[in-house]
Image (cartoon, rainbow, N blue to C red):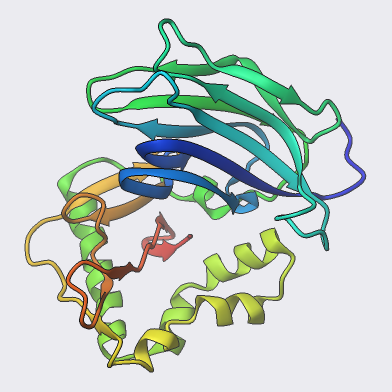
Length: 282
């Protein structure tokens, strides 16, 4: 399918009163660990590759209600359009998991959209730990080959985990030193690709990615201690992207909100390994 316009892509998803998480190519985009009503959207051009893509909406309620609903839409819009008001729906999938023998339904499909659902590969998988609405789709718009497609294929073992932990510790020392320039330089691949995906300048993306807001407000944000014990290795994108977590989904580097016992700002970093070193990809 030839496309005259290079569109931007997004995802919109909603759940009603359930904990949930959203992943694409097994890269976590969102996590809500407590039951809540959620209807939100994110830009995802930087996670869309040529050909087949897979998005997963996970839920783990104690039990579903009859009106429990999971809904996922893939969106696209032209450069310069407002994605909140002018985005078009490529296709929409919904399931009512509280009903017996429920299966996902495709409610709408735009035949002119660059993203097309793979109708035989949209399923709801029930499991002991969590359930998954798996949404597979094809992208017919040419895309760059992103960093998360190019990294070395990683092994899920202690050596990989410990090597990545050392890189986190190196970056943590830059946070301790409040060296924003060094952190932005370490994020150069991410900044370049986010600029390419969004159509914004690298200077603008670098400014948005800056940590100076945290460094300049010590009365509001305090850098949390680096974890002492071993952390958990997480792999996505066919084992080409990696990140570490400590308890639950908490990340190794985070800022506490002064005066609040439960509010934190996580520094979510996703790494690839190539040319013998770790590299911030997202």
